[in-house]
Length: 334
Image 1 (cartoon, rainbow, N blue to C red):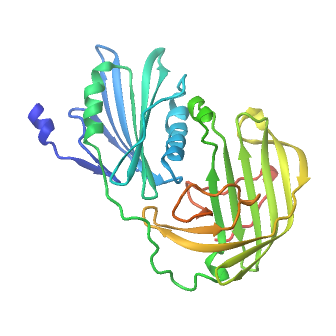
Image 2 (image 1 turned 90 degrees about the vertical axis):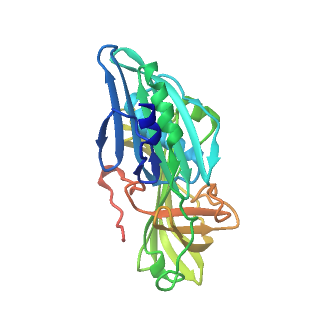
């Protein structure tokens, strides 16, 4: 058995290669490969899931927190904040791990998340078990893991003129959250989503949504106006800007009733814009740079590829259009 494990061929899934545990049940779907072992006599079990990579949120801290909320908190509802290991790096990839207890069928169990981040990609391995007997197999798989070497993000030649209106037409969105130690340690995470829609006729609309479990309201920002492009300079000229406060429907992240509305001071801003292609995610991003932060865009991105910049990505499964309350619609241009 030892020789079989030593010389077993590695398997590949997306950007991860690994040595699977021998004799475990394997299940394959589009986005996850999982291995399960059950000991009916001892009533113990273990499941290891390798998750397909997605677009990175810009750094390992943001990626880990997002994966922890989506993969661990939503599925297993751990009772405590995760015990975290120090971030370490290999071949340009950063790795962060966390462990927490949860209850399954009235017995204690453990959930372990290993998240890797780099080259504009993020992937995770989720381990859940209620038995110490599986630790050797878990460690063997995690120790065997290797990551595909990706090229650094570079921008290939663009088709057409990068400095005309057509190059920014469409809807572009960005997400951010508060990564303070208190929120991370207690699993109380907020988010704010911002989206621009640039139309062919020189008009734009901007929408923002801010959600925080510690607040009793959801904030919705709406702005519209016109824009002008000269070379790689983009000028935003707002005509109307409001901030709405909505109640939370049944305390959830859903629109309740409109509480109040206030007008926001109009903020005309000159940006320097760039279209940048990220090889890892195979997507163009719209980068806006300015001399100082703006009320509309919030703090600069932590991504250091471009300084004093905000990174807006195209609408996708991981960057969804903000759903507005009361059936409100914003005309989107692809």
